[in-house]
Length: 157
Image 1 (cartoon, rainbow, N blue to C red):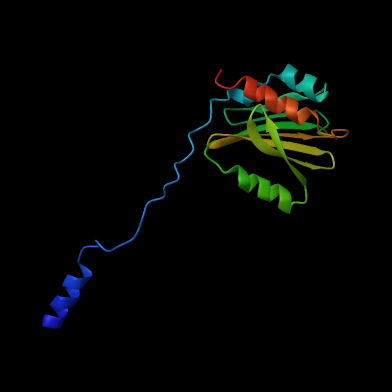
Image 2: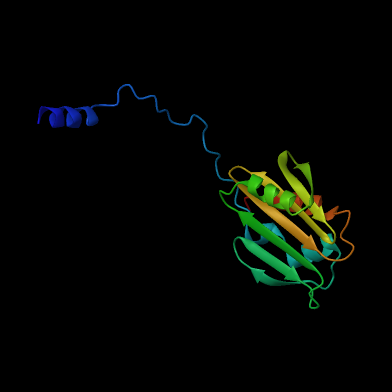
């Protein structure tokens, strides 16, 4: 019985000698409000991409999609709140896309390009946003910087 009491009191003792410490890395603050479709209008999308026949087929607070009626051209905006941009970079790399670092107005991210597909992801605090353009003749993907800049210019509005 003494052995049982000794084991219980040892197991219930204080953890004063414990060396567990909390992480000293502060969490990133949320990014700015980006508005519906990253602040882009249908006319902005047509003008920037040169896809004159695309129309919005989906619009909400985190994702917007524009498509041509034939389906051969598509533009998509997605806003990832509190999600790691590096996971998106890893997926692009594993899928064999050409991944390159990019900086737009002091915000960092990457582009990921493949045949007929261009993507840009830009970090904003704990969030990031992503633009994807699909269709013929989208290379060399110069429109990515313009789409990212438009979203950054209209953040918080």
